[in-house]
Image 1 (cartoon, rainbow, N blue to C red):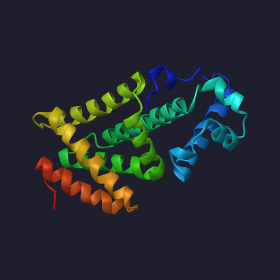
Image 2: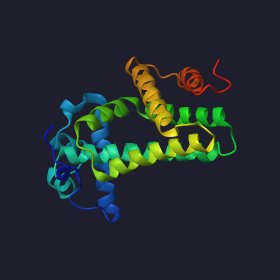
Image 3: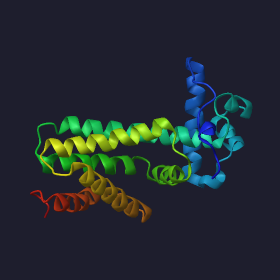
Image 4: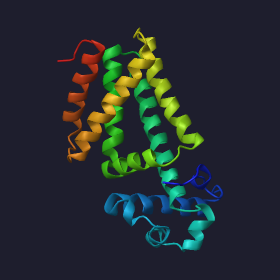
Length: 204
């Protein structure tokens, strides 16, 4: 994809209630199209029609479909970061195994909340040039996991965090692609993989 980073930013930010509602309608319409029809069905005309607005109104905020996709990706990353931050707070007094399990559940929750949408946006993120906000959100997520590991005495926390994030992403992505929606079963498998990697109790 030859989209430049400039095309990924909205033309303007919605400040009033009506404009915010318009942008929310565009985002939800695009999300549903991605879930049902994939990227091939995502056009600005189709999004505008689905959102119940004119394409001119859509262009007031988004210069093209790449900007809509980028906005959805940023929203996905913000939600994922919020899930992980909540997991860290909830497991503040837990040991390494307890905290790792909390983070596993945050990762699975993110992917199973809207699995088809998460898959589509993960693919789009790989093709689009990352904007500064998306890069910052991903960096915050990595830093959060690194911090949790370091606080619990894990050596070389940066490398371990990289491995665990990649491991969980790969396992969840593979499971979702096969149609799995068993939250508890997937969490148990990830627990075994993560705790086994960490050498933490409770890996069996």
